Length: 249
Ligand code: PTJ
Image (cartoon, rainbow, N blue to C red):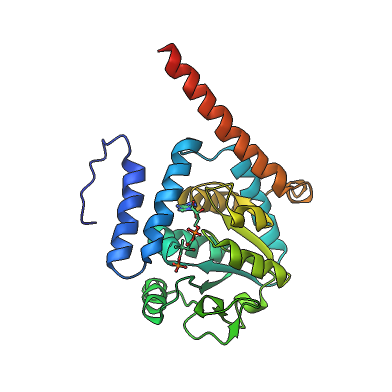
């Protein structure tokens, strides 16, 4: 890492993630828009309190059950995800028998290659370099995918995703799981399961839950509307508590 962050810094974790995104950008893995997306995520995480709340834990457990029930689950990886959490992606995909596909919104062949290489350097083969299918209803390169991976998937885990593509995947009949700190985003509202948690935290939780047993009622009783409502209520009550304690000081 080019910037040496002192461990004693009160915002150490957040600064390390920011630095990974900057490095990823410099190495040609993260898109320009990935820097903006990360900043938006940071802002929501700050407001949420930078921890995994109940609404995140429930969604993470439901997601694991849905992936375990799937016939062809695929983990879709973009530039930000590769820069922040390549090792966690590999571990979770192995635990849950998922294929990994590099699938970019701002697709360039150069960036796809660089991300594929990140996995290959760790001895993991991934899909995405040779697309032979399209996400139906989308135009341009953002539609490209592989027949073996996303096109044939029944369940797709697609963190930090754009709303339009989420809708297109839903229209193809897929069960879509996303990780998105913004509970107001179109993706959050369109996915079947929205994990309102920071990507790295969410994946670490999912890795740990995958190693144990998860009560199957969590998926049976799951309502994404309820989860998003819990997240918004949390944001609202946390802000009003903070505003009150500010007045009292
Ligand atoms: O690498 P590419 O070309 O596929 O592009 C990736 C980005 C992320 C640039 C692209 O998918 C995009 O533009 O996404 P959006 O529409 O900006 O949505 C990203 C969402 O992820 C936003 O709602 C952010 O709040 C959220 N987000 C950002 N960082 C994190 C996050 N959620 C969880 N953890 C994060 N670290």
